Length: 426
Image 1: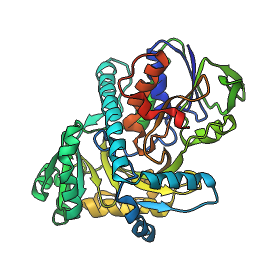
Image 2 (image 1 turned 45 degrees about the vertical axis):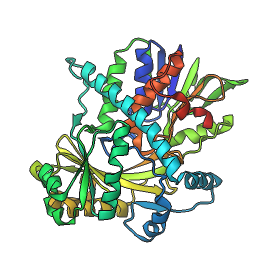
Image 3 (image 1 turned 180 degrees about the horizontal axis):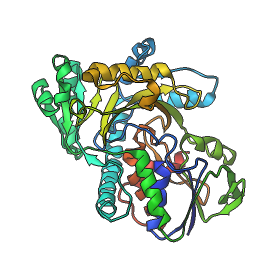
Image 4 (image 1 turned 120 degrees about the horizontal axis):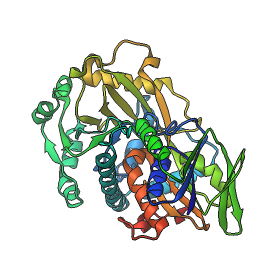
C-alpha cells in the first residue's frame, strides 16, 4: 500500500518505521530540514510508562486559581477569542472527575506498556547492530516522584495497590530511603515527605531517536523521506483522501496518515475533520554536566512544581510547565528562568553560571486532547488516518501508537483496544 505520512516528529517517524516494517511503500513529508525538530526536539526525555495519568484529574480545578496567581506556576492560562479554546476547556472540565481520570489512566497504561515492549524490542534488535546508528542515550534509570507535602505523599501511597493491579511495579520510600537511593537529593532532605519509586522507567534523547529512525529508514526499500517539504493540503475525491498536495506537486496515496501535531488542525479543517486539540506549551533547558557526581542518576519528578529531571548522556534535561496560550513556540525567558531557579534550589550549584543561551532553552507545543487520550486510527474519510493528541506523552506513547496504527492499517487484531483511541472523535 502507498502510505504518505505528514509530519516527522517522534509520532510521525515511528509510524513510518512500523509501516515500513510491514512492507508498505512509505513517503514521509516534513516541512523542516530534518526529523524531530519541533515538539520532539528537547522534550523531558523521560519514557515514563507508569506515569500517564491525564492532566484532567479530580483535584485539578481546585488548584487552578492558585496556579494562575503564581508567576512561577506549573500551569498558565491566557484566554483568547477563539471558540476552539473554549470548547477544549469545556471538555477538559468535564473530564476532571475521578471516574473519567481513572478510566483514562487504565487505557493509557495499556498503550504505554505496549509502547515499552516495542521500544525495548527495537533497542534489542537494532541497537546492537554494527553501524545501525541507534545511539540516543537510551537507559533504564528508574524514576522518583518526590513529594514535599505529606498529604500528597499519603495520597500517592494509597494508589500503589491500584497501580499494581494495572501492572505497575512501584514502592513508597521515606526521606531517608529516598536520599540513600539518590544522593543528589541530600540538599532538600528535610523538605522531602516521601517519594514513589518505579525502577523500570527509562530515558532517552527524543531528537536523536528520531534521527536514528531516519537513518534506518534510509536503508529500507520503498521508503522516501522528503524534508523541507511543506504540505499545502490533502486531496479529496468524494469521501476519500487520495493524496497530499505540496509545492512540488501531488503525492498520490492509498492512505494518508496525519501526524503533524498541533499543525494538523488547520490542515484537516477544510475537510470538516476537527480534532479537539490545544497546544500545551512546555519548556526545557539542557544543563551540561561538568561535575556529573552532583547530578541525579535516577529520573526525578518534583511533584509540587511539575518539573521533570532526566540525565541524558552527559547532560541533565529539565522540563516542565503547561501553558494554555497562543503565540507559537516563542521562548518565554521568565518561564525558562523558573526552570533554572528550581534546578538550583533542588540540586545546589549544578547549573553553571553561564549565559542562558548555553543552556539550550527550548519551548514546544504539545498537542493535547481534553481527556488525555490520543486519536489513533482511521477517520470518517476513507484513506485518512490520524495519529494525534499525545500531549506530554509523545515520546512515551509513540512506539505503541505506531504499532496500533500499523495493526489497524493491516487489518490485524491490535495489541490494545483500538476503540479506546478512536480517531472518529475528530
